[in-house]
Amino acid sequence: MKPLWAGKLEANLLVAKGQAQNEHDLVWQAAIAVLAAFTAPDYLQRILGGSDPFIKMEGKRPVPKYAWRIMEFADILFTLRHCVGFGVLLERLLTRPLREAFYEGQAAATLHDAGLSIAIRPESGVRGSDFDFSASSTEGTLNCEVTALTRFSSETLRNSLNSKRKQLPEDGPAIIFCTLPDDWIFDDNYDVLDRCVETFLRGTGRVNAVVPAWCVTHSLEDDTTLTVRTTRPIANHRPRTAFNLSFLLREHHSAVIGQAALRMGRMPDSAVAGTHLNYMAYLWSL
Image (spheres, rainbow, N blue to C red):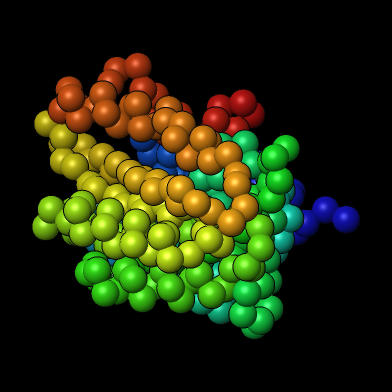
């Protein structure tokens, strides 16, 4: 039995393709089309109406700093649509703040793009088996837990990592994705981050790595904005169960585009709008 969104997705994208005024507008219109296929109209209206603090609106469009979240949110859902437990993620959108579901989906989509198979897990309420999702490769299965800080300090980071560690099984490889608040980087906190995570990893064998991640929005010379997502994987040198984590070190092609844009002060001429979004790659094929 096909899911309810199966017929709507392609139809919505084709409508967006016909109505968009230019390539940049198409990226936005296609994102709305994807979200409309996967979510109920009242949910989408709430998000675009500015009632969720995770998406700050300015008229009918998000504040530039937050516009990328709408497009990435659409890309997360598109990327994970065939994964085991995708319905669990959609249900979480109805019962949790968007911020929580967004960062969980973002971590899962990151590993999916790296070639791993994702299975999103329903909540069990049982300590040690209540992690967010699993990611499998030919090497085995990785247990994954996600956290996102609203304030950065060694104390909040340590408490969050310890709390998430308890959600993971004692056996089997595991990683924790930890999204940091956007402004953490401006206080030159790299040393604090590294020391805190390395101390945490020395005290546990069940976590193979912690993956801090954050976004920084840059204003370019051509009056466009660029949001760059950075990850800083920190590995445990003595995990209880070994797992090859080389996929965490691969550089995504969107990062290459971002680096070039920052050097040039503008988006490279060779970068077609939205080409690093999976839903846009699909749309160009229709």
